[in-house]
Image 1 (cartoon, rainbow, N blue to C red):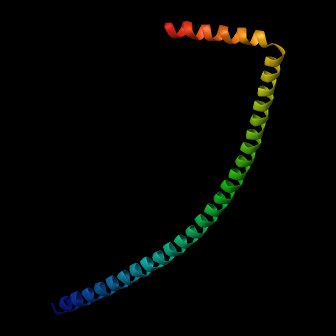
Image 2 (cartoon, rainbow, N blue to C red; image 1 turned 120 degrees about the vertical axis):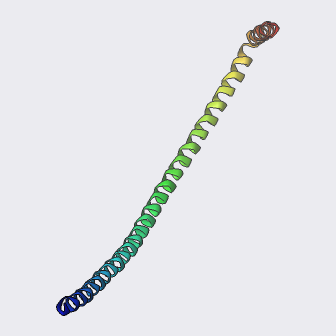
Image 3 (tube, rainbow, N blue to C red; image 1 turned 180 degrees about the horizontal axis):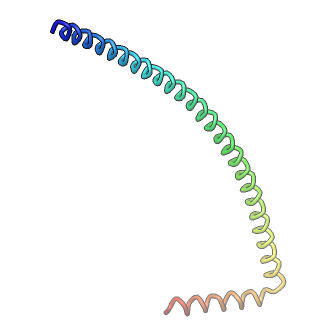
Length: 116
């Protein structure tokens, strides 16, 4: 029996040592994972900042391009409006009676539609 008592106490000590070694190994792995996670977070932050700056630059360039195009379009519309107004004035000067007749016909049409 003495053998079994000594043997069981050695076995417990051995198990406690193995558990301690296992716990230490797990804690080291957890710490290594934390360090890797911190490094990945840092790299991801740098990458996302770089992508954000790149997208911001592209958006700024696109905005400038759209702004330039809209200014060109506005100039074209203004020129078209001025040409149209000039043509209307010229037509009215050349054909005053036809213009008055067309305006009267248009007014009559609007009045008829308004009655309905």
